[in-house]
Length: 119
Ligand SMILES: [Zn+2]
Image (cartoon, rainbow, N blue to C red; front, side, top):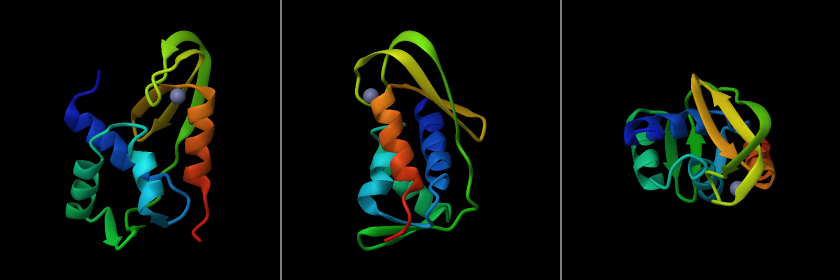
């Protein structure tokens, strides 16, 4: 298991992978929650480091965009996000982090959130 520090770093990296530079707070939180439940800590750290700026119910990503790649393979594991038993594990690779495993449903949900255009 990753340490608290690593989880925060990985969540910050994943936030940078959003294709829109402006996200609703809800979307930002759902991205962060893929990695850790420490969402408030992650957002505080992101503001402190100039990675994001908060604007009411939205956040603006100030850091350079990053990319996440997805790899998958057969497995017998538990989805990191929802805790369901999964047979096909998806892992997100970004900035030297490997995040997962996630089930098909959760990976689809996060891919959708990450690729959402700003409203
Ligand atoms: Zn899941």
